[in-house]
Length: 118
Image 1: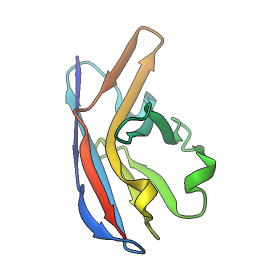
Image 2 (image 1 turned 135 degrees about the vertical axis):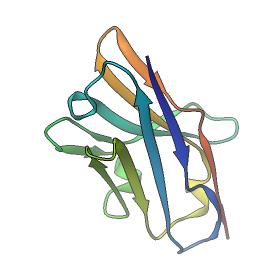
Image 3 (image 1 turned 180 degrees about the vertical axis):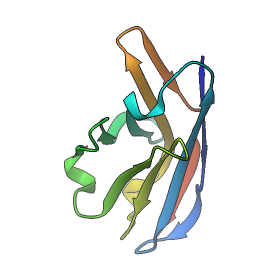
Image 4 (image 1 turned 60 degrees about the vertical axis):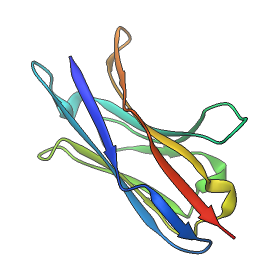
């Protein structure tokens, strides 16, 4: 079993920056083999993909955050990060960390609130 715990959310003014962290813990898993991602859910909207990082450190981003957000991983610390710059009010939502070892073994964090004021 793998646990994912996010941190780093908060309230920031438009144009500001935040860095989210997601630390993984558990037994009998290899963090470096995990595909990892950040998703977000705004009030009244469906959860949407923000960014993915694969075991080879290749990345994918939603069009809405390209050029502003950067996902990265530190396998030694078993942590994935989301650096968010030039934040907009539309970036407001609950940001959740996702990790997958296989089709049958995927995990979610509890989420962290990000609020961007105009």
